[in-house]
Image (cartoon, rainbow over the protein chains, first blue to last red):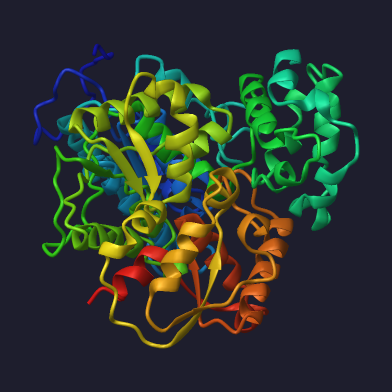
Length: 180
Length: 377
């Protein structure tokens, strides 16, 4: 399988980059993690650019279906990230996120997808450096695992946000999950 | 469309409306009418009935088929219309966000080695590759992982199926490469994914050298026997639901460990009406020492569906049907509700979670294989 490659902007060097750039979907909550990504941006921190962020109001909203759909459509890795415990804008939303994540993880393991392709992280709005570190580390980890078995040549188009109300062919991204 | 109407005998419809008056969804109050679809199909209906999102409200329980005096195969009509709807990108609003559909499509794509046999213990004798009987386990292990909040262990039914086969001296093939049978995708209209699953599964079973597929899942049984037909051309493979297989060999099964219990039996729509298997499970339950079978008001071919069929229809009407069904079960005075399909368990357990009705409709549920296996030792 040929996949686009580029020289990483910055690699931690822990894993030698194989000949592919992973496609990673990041679900980031509006109040902490998405703002954390913003902080990383305004601080001009360099990190690897192989992910697409989907902003959600709360990590607790990230249901198994979204993560599984990302994998189905060929994502090489999925990162779910929200506020630290005690910091959740909705008090206990991130506790819900853990429940949903555990469920997703058990299905992912059953399917035989490597658990390393899925990760849950807490990143606050101030932690721009940490956001960059997590992305770098996770990108390297996924790169080491290689392309997802479900990735197809046409998968890259399918992950992109579209319009509509269908749940089957991936023409539609969950409501409230549109990036900006 | 003309061909579809012809194939499903829709042209024979004489507009009596029995289907709509029987339909569990319509009776629960939904704006849904099988007759409307049949008539629209007869009129051609291109761009109308084949793009009607309400097609996905049908439970495909086949109750209307069993009542139709003109023998219109409405359930088959729905299956075919959904295929057309799917091609036209009219799709159901899948419950659970479509997570289960994603899982099934990933299996259809393939490429991974599933970890689906974690439930196999040392006490169970199975063969991973070759054997005469292939035990088609179904997706119980996925249901248990996906619905932890229901507190179910549908995989116990699968485990019990192996124990029962072992007790008959059979070492079944249980393969880690088994994939979803494709039942739900087919009923969601996704013929392409169904085909790739069917081809993989048929090749897997043929490679094992098995002559018989036995499955404890009603949906897998239907799919294997009816929907896999075109993929099994020229093959001698037979397909039986576990209850049919056990009923045939019931005399070899030593059941002695009984304790007095009153049970009722929920006929899965796939097993009862689609395949016509209503006697075998009852014969088996009749052999369990101490078990007294109390029938619900609607049983056998008249049984009410668990209202969750194909992961494409979950709404307040479904809930109403489930609650009514559980009340019927409770009215028999039974302590345990026995069924032969894991999905019945999932959907009825979900209805029992209702915080207001919970205590009124709660009842213990077991797969028929579990009940039989418990009586073994």
